[in-house]
Image (cartoon, rainbow, N blue to C red; front, top):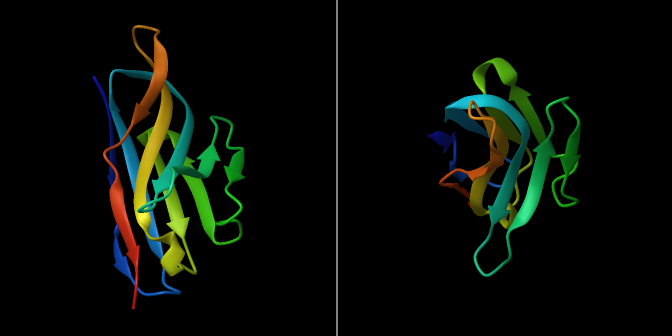
Length: 120
């Protein structure tokens, strides 16, 4: 009943930029936190960036100063602007959100992931 759909991944050269989007749809009453995670091959999943309903943000140490998270509450969408990309940013990026449905139940949801590859 609730879906998160990511878009915007792809192949980019080192130093380049990409913008990821994640749109939530379905039986939504309210979206609380919206986050981006990533999982690189052979590594554990890590938090990239998070934004709460009030707009406060939090970033992983490895992306501070390079990535910016934002959200459009009217569109139920979260964005991740990624600048100065490095090969070590290569990973599958996942959107996550804590959502309250119209039935007043709250839980976390995940998107299907989008591949970001940084390579020359």
